[in-house]
Length: 319
Image (tube, rainbow, N blue to C red):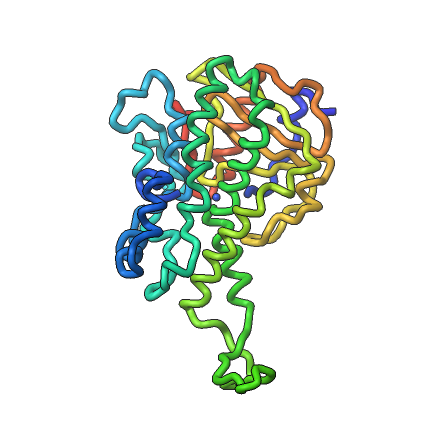
């Protein structure tokens, strides 16, 4: 079984992933459903889409910097520099979850409607657990795993993977359907790549379906939580949020992590909840489901996150 120090002995391999400045509330989603197609398109396109929710990122703001205009320390992998940022500035792209131009929004599911509950509930659940040092974390384990899955399913990496898969598809356009409905005519007998509008919409649809499926891949994993009280020696997060470590060879760049790798005996899923707490998942049982984190574990995780992040690290302090 894993012990609290076993976790840091595993080798790092590969990892892995919101809406407008704030996620739309339930009432806002209802209003959008009542809009005309043109109104919906104006409301739902071209927004600042956070693929890393602001409510999640705020958990990595330390008490000593809570009143600062830019309270988070941000390490940029490409410049190798630390700067201070606000959550509104990072983990986002304009129109990241937009359907293609001209899409009838009355016929598609908008991302906000799929994950609004998770985005709204996560900060509240985290604050409830923080009140007693996350000691009751197992009572909300299922919700935390569901939120974790949403982050991976909607991440930039997941979107890239879906796009690569969709671009491999080939199709033909139906020109007409017989009156008896038993036969049809296509415009060509040679399958061809999908139009760009179809590629974009299919990518969004597949991503949302993945979110809805939930974390089925985690059903055979055991979980533990480690916590810290020291803001100067915190847990951190990255643009990827959820990380997989282990000794088995990882997938090729931009390919999905196979279930066999997740369920490998030496694999470890790492999900930081905030600067104070981090969940770990493994096919093997842990000696302790809840414990304070060893200092060397915190240092080891931060070093790995800095080395292996795709874009950035978020922390209470520079390191």
